[in-house]
Image (cartoon, rainbow, N blue to C red; front, side, top):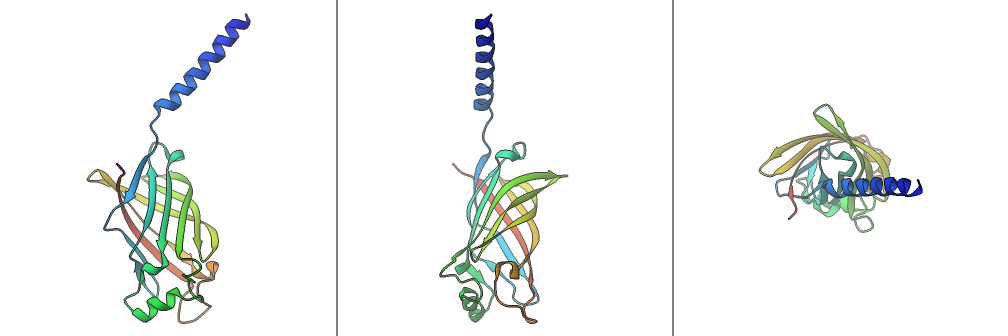
Length: 181
């Protein structure tokens, strides 16, 4: 009797282990040229010229999918050299102490044909939970993720309250990725 229970448990462990080994992990991607990260307001507006990080994504395995992205403050381009330099200062992004903006997902949900990415946005040493709506399209063996959301700069102590600069910054992005080899 005991041996039947032992063999039953052993068969269950083997079955669970083999199912885990058979399930492929989420595909890992790297960011391609042609990405676009824009921030817009009445003033300032601009882009990030650099984006780094990796994306693990499988629309059928969202539990193992993940975004880990970094945007260097030094890559801010507003079209105005003085404004670009001011963005680096301690009042704004304090680029010497906090050289990057980071976003790391914690969960991804399907929402109709689109996705909702939940994660932590870290800017100027302050981390806040941020939900980002996401569209995904397939092309040329890769994927492109796009969407838009709003960030209140005061939540991250970027700049000071001012009538000249709105608190809410509209962020839009298009992030093409290709499979890592």
